[in-house]
Amino acid sequence: MSEETEKLELDPDFQPWRLMLETVKGASHDRQNLPNQDHGKFYQPNENRLPIILAISDGHGSAKSFRSDRGSKFAVETAIELLRGLVDQKSDRQNISAVKDYINDKLPQRIVSRWKEKVNDDLKNKDLSSKELDNLEKEQGTKVRQSFEDHKEDHKYVVYGATLLAVLVTEDYHLYLQLGDGDILTVDMWGKITRPIVKDENLIANETYSLCMKDPWRYINNHFVTYTQECKRPMILVSTDGYANSFDNEEKFVKIGKDYLDMIRQQTFDEVASQLKYFLEQTSQGGSGDDITFGLIKQIDLQDTGDGIKILKEFTKKKIQQIENKYVQKDDLQQFTNILTETTEIYSNQIETLLKNYSNLLQPLEKSLIELLESHYRKLENLKKDWDNLTEQKSQYSNFTNNKKNTEVTTTEINITLNQIKKKSIFLANRINYNYHFSYY
Image (cartoon, rainbow, N blue to C red; front, side, top):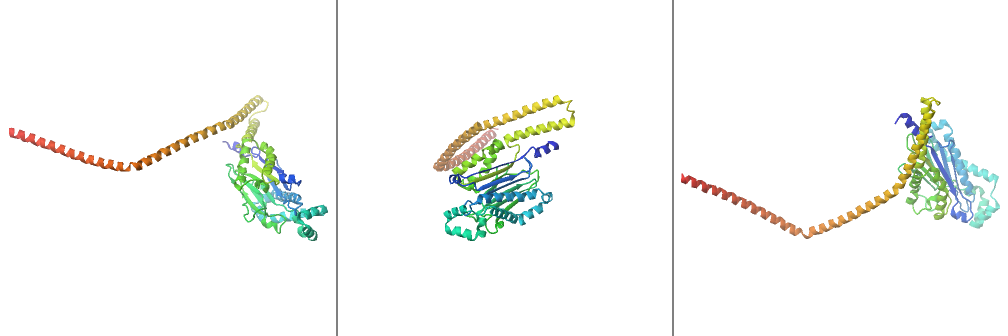
């Protein structure tokens, strides 16, 4: 492979960075006529290229957090704004060490401070209404309402309570941020799934960290990973807790990482994205009943069957254009270009057909393999039975075997004795014959 070809394969134009994001109202919220209290947003200034910022938030939705749908919106907006500051300034982007220091020392406090500013601005524009307080009293009682009215300053942030999960993907590094529940998963090219931020085992039941608690910046966890352009990046999944809570256990939920990777490879990224809302709605209805927000970031490569064909086509067209511009005059070789283009289209269509046929062949191949394995398994069972029978026979005839060995020893001794007698007989016969001849002469 030439250096030029290798460079083309690594070019972002040929292996684009794609993103899907969807949020759905929970089945239980729909029945109660409540709003979707999740929020999600992304930032990708250059289509199909890095950087990408993805942020989602889960509003608490409790009786006391009756504006958490706006609190989650403010959380997402805050994360996007502050993380954009890391990628919009070249000086910061080029100094990885300075970026890490900022993330560890200043970013958490600034996220909390900026979120609180947005809450305060919202309250200035629209103070807590009588209707909202009436609903609070209905749910929590008169004392709780009175406490909110008397100590409004202490309770105002609880009204907007929300979590936050955010991811920043650049050419040089990945940054993962998390406050509260929800999940961030990474999936490598072989389907291995990891959590860049370990789940906090101190939280039990429905407890979670929140932007509305005291000093929430202390509980914002981050994970920072540096990369080179040649490194194979993982696929990234981000979801609010309504997704994981729809599964019986952690193992079943984590498996969605491999499931989404397989779907994208077997179909196309756009086809999976078009079905995402339906997937989430079905998951909520059959599971937690909670709102679900889900985002996925992936760099498309040749292993993604449907999208990989598009990559090959674009690569070939680019290569033809380079040859045409570099080596020939357009007017002189127009016919050659047309023929080469037609050949390329035929080649691409053949690849597409082969891939479809390959997919169709997998099912009977899998069936044949299963039948073969079952046949070998039955043979192994029969061999085991035979072996058990032989073992039993060995035990039963062990005495006979020992007697046989003794008989063999006795027979051997007899043979030795007979040979000795035979030798002695021959010796005596020779002596007799000798004496006879000697006496005759």
